[in-house]
Image (cartoon, rainbow, N blue to C red; front, side, top):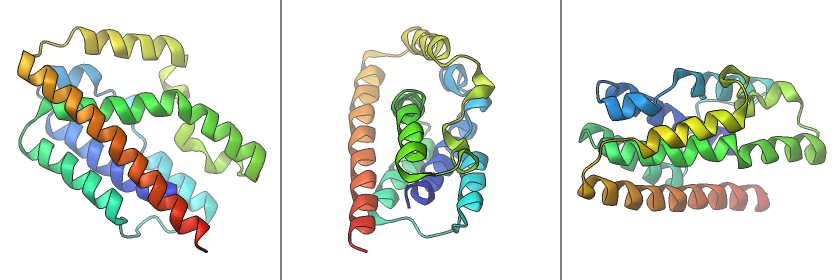
Length: 171
């Protein structure tokens, strides 16, 4: 189930942001209002699904990469992974939530992961987030690493979605 795999991703990512929170660049984007771990746990409980399942291979590759970046204090890479996940949820995630409710009858109580009411209006928040990104003091090498990590994060997310889809479709 996607939520189970995302629980691994967000647990790792939120731990990485916490670990690097003394870096002002990470602190600039590390808003606790974005935290998703407790919401994912609540959604899994509402669905009657286990929260503590092993990560699939694609998720494991993803979280090991984020862990490595955090342990190396690679702020640029952590910021990139944060951007891809959270801004994706603030944009496409809203569409996914509506479709899950409309097409599959998933109750709102099991879709709290997609509820960002703690941040206020989504578009102004996304705009402020992007402004914070644009104002980060990064070296050219860090910018390049951030772009590379963002591309890598997109690939990891595609791989996780595919793995979950294959698991569901093979039942």
